[in-house]
Length: 218
Image (cartoon, rainbow, N blue to C red):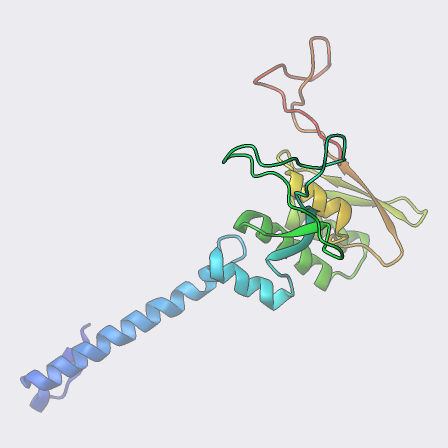
């Protein structure tokens, strides 16, 4: 039902009254549409850009990851990770080191990597550190088939099922201690075997090229 039809009879034929109610209706509809999109805009699975930054700020995770990788410093032949002089427009060469400068550089995460890190931070913030809780958090971050086992020696074995575990995720898991765990308890990470791993002829339940999936250890 149109709101102008709800006007009392003496205003139903007044142009100004009709124009005012139509304008207000348009404003209310636009505002309501914006309110309806808020849950989706702040959904961690679908949020992007500034919306994802807002979620990260709420849980305490910055998009800028400090000291992520080595700076491209200048070095002569034989220097580990050293870059030479600039040769062309494509190869910029190494940057000369200045005393007390950081040897590592920060990066700004894309939405996919940032979303993963936010999930890890949420799990860390709200963990209760029981085996069941750790397993639930792993399912939230990776998949329902990722699980943790207690080795009863102050360590946990964590099996992660993620057939597309990126280099960034591997770095986070191994170096940032961002996944949930009890205080003082070590974690041994294992990458679960995919349904059809790659293998050469004779390997049981394995697939060849273009069929099997290559395994990677964490």
